[in-house]
Length: 116
Image (tube, helix red, strand yellow):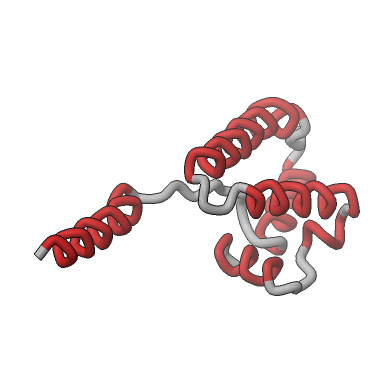
């Protein structure tokens, strides 16, 4: 299951690996969604939230996760099998510049039509 499918599954009330593993992680996810919802319409606030999530992802990956990597082949195989079974490697997708500018182009076309 790719990242977008996992997010859609969770957003529509589906039970995913995060919910099954830890009530604490589920509460964290709910808190983040709440912050995002309260920031609706405020691009700068949502961007700040995304930056915090990206920083936390990097800190955990480069620190605690790397320190906890297995030291033998059997444990490594088990970890890789778990990663594959539970949706793949966690990845924070960045918007492409074209996607970001799409809204600007639509807005610019709308403004041009109203000026005529």
